[in-house]
Image (tube, rainbow, N blue to C red; front, side):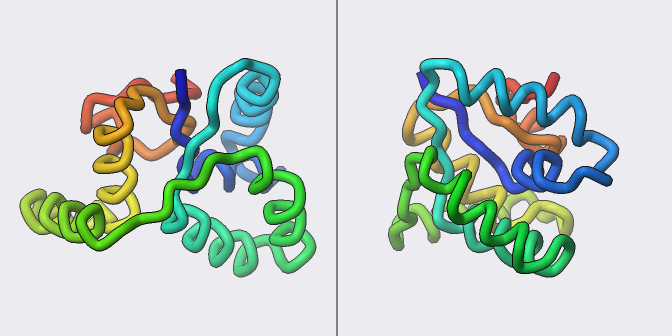
Length: 133
């Protein structure tokens, strides 16, 4: 079984001032001690690095890169997935639905992943199980 890890989950774990930090940190520890395969994309990594560096600084960015990234299976997005995600984004016609989210949805569907560690409501709207619930 696999769990997809989204930027919002990473941010909630890393940012102690985030309103969801306590709950997300507990779920994150549960996920880490499980037998689940933790999957994300290179798009999520870029988005997360940019946000962590901007909001929390370089020390937190290094913690992310050194302590968190090594436990992840990274799916590297190819041209076909990128174009499919662009199609999803344009079809949705929603300004708050990002390309990174659409890449995540497409990747999850292709890999048969049904659960995401995310605080982004768009994953639930797309029919995925979200942790924390």
